[in-house]
Length: 417
Image 1 (cartoon, rainbow, N blue to C red):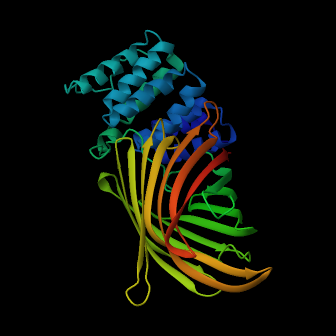
Image 2 (cartoon, rainbow, N blue to C red; image 1 turned 45 degrees about the vertical axis):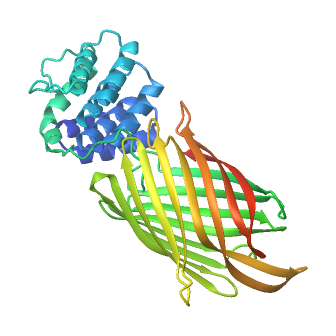
Image 3 (tube, helix red, strand yellow; image 1 turned 90 degrees about the vertical axis):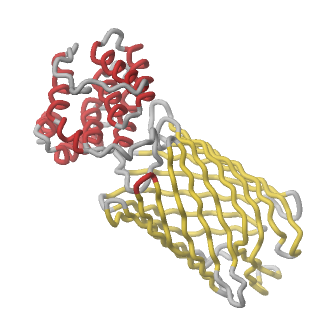
């Protein structure tokens, strides 16, 4: 039976991938095994996955303030990426709980030297003479650190400039499942009654990617209906993944079928590109949309510009676009952001007499949109909370050139397990 000791020995011998598999299994079965989680985080850090390591170290130190190994390894993780200010902040915080710890004091000095643009010694943070207060645990950490020195030197950190990066479907989660509930509503300044939207979704991550089945519910324009939806995020290569989606509904307020697909490519310098399309099938006609996006992250900020191009005959092609800006806080699950959008997008207009559908017309409605969002996790649990509010100015479908205002708000809750 595999154990923490097996994983430690593998890591000590440089077999970090084998050690990581054991540790992932251990923390999935026993999430409160902080020693195993700390070693798992260290394997991420040694292999250059600094963001994932940071997430794990933050989780440990938030649960157990005096976990010396986690604090020391967390500080080293920031030093590897040359985030000296963050390393200094972590060292100062660690010393509140581990007053007088010589290793943390030493790492704090290195962080200060980095901030002052001074060169530190050849040994760097791999000081063979570092004093371990807890002989059983700290000496193990020092030995592994010395063993992995060559691994660390082989990692190219010249492009690692961020403190916190957004999470992508390429990131491997420790907790493989999520269940989420979302509710939102929209009110209008004229004509229309309030609209309600709800969604329940389940996400499961595998080694090939993620799958997310969902059910959407809407109550709008005096009618209600369900849409059944499934999304896939398959990993295609080390820095390439795809988004695939299919939705079906027999409700009149949803399209009968919708399909979507995008290919995402992560490039150096914090750039992400995507391209793909959308196909929406209504009763009266079909809609085809070409999509593309440009994403960029710098520091704790992430920017994403996405456009939607709807080809139409007679040079009547329609365009719409959205700009998303987020500032990430302590990790990739915590952020505050804003969106702004404008352009023409397809909207379904239905004429009915009682329960009889008389006509179905697809119009291209002009709109401008502005929204803000805030997502955060609990202090002692990985569950996710999100709130958003937005305002839109949209053209009346029955009176071209005249507009109405709409205000929307929503809440989302996700449980990770």
